[in-house]
Length: 273
Image (cartoon, rainbow, N blue to C red; front, side, top):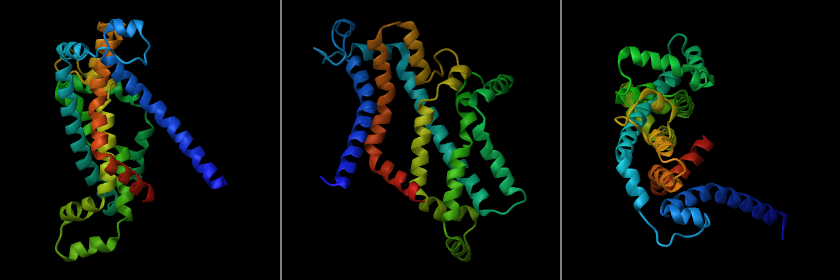
């Protein structure tokens, strides 16, 4: 066997092992979720349930998990839409608009990525407490809806790579700045926008610390907080906890299955750029 084939076989072996390590916990979670507590306590974790049961999912939904799913979905959609719109506008301003202090302001804003979120948690909590917005939907979305340094940085670099001639041609055709953003920049940036959309959806769907601090009770409880509270209430009842975890993961898995081609294409395109 040639050295190239050996390297390819070794690479596939490493990737297969990594994929197995990644997928196995998800499969075990789903497998445990359809077992009864007795089956889980007496059998092997890898044993198939006999028979499978949906009682764990019914108990979790009765606990109020359905509302948590709805709140999390609304928060994710609102934040994702807001971040994409504001990030595109800010990135265009930093990439193609001339104004005093533009580059300095951009690097100062980018430097906020170095600040740990825990540093701003208490000041943010006090601000929302003064505004009377704690335990509301706005408390969940406002800290994240106005763009992110990472998204603005990625889009700025992408916009700077778009030929200036295209923008000049659009100007000659009578396009204003908003027309250029909507009809030139956004269509040419679909791969990177797809990447940012998926990153934002995953990060917001899994957001835990700020929703835990900003909300109380079940009115605006998100999935991550509901899962943690469920684990506290049903201590050591792992079949229920795994049912909740499976419900939380399932939408992301479905999203990836539907858009996997776009995910891979966007990652490859962004890497080339």
